[in-house]
Length: 277
Image (cartoon, rainbow, N blue to C red; front, side, top):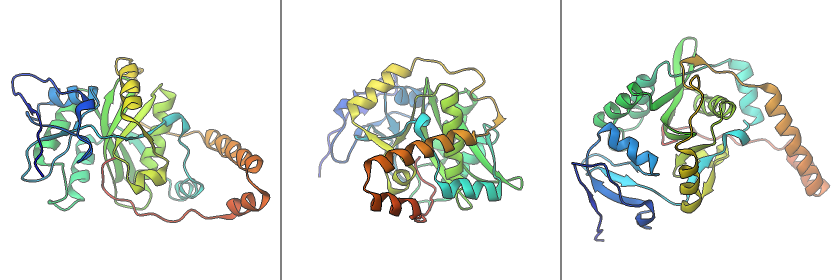
């Protein structure tokens, strides 16, 4: 199949409109350019991101539908909360960004990762500039999970996540959603839906709805202390309150037999991977 794509110029950071992206492969928009951190930042500000494999040119994407989390609505499963009470992960922000990026790359076979050394260097430079941020999960002072991405106004564009032990990346997402929502964050972009993200509660937006939200929030600022290196904590009361609300909705809307079955069902275990967030 022959594809006709615009090639990005090296002397400017202009991109085609995301609405010009191909339907197949979903979201492919352009090729070329370079991995200049300012070009990457400009891409995210317009709903576009780089994603390409070994021996491929630099490819730029803006898929539809778009996978997202609403941080204010996120609530972890009972099993995840129970696991955290048992193991007591420590969760921090911006304390080991380069290590998180490196582990996200290393935990995939070389032929499957999009995080080449040039990509890692670009995101590390964006971290130095204050645009790229990480969430780290620690167990006995060992980095065992995390995620990273770019802050675009009141949006966070997740790039990748990893786990070395069970539930580590899930805990990173949980704590970050709580922190981000408290600081006024509006949306977490996960780019492309997959079973792991769906199991965590990610939703899909049409391209128009996603771009509308991006344009609305990209120029809005977060408090200065949002991404200051710090330890993150969560409110137990918040999750309990949401759980009670959902339980009440279920009891009102479902037949008694369905409600009873739901109350005793167990969440199936699901694998965690190093993958795009």
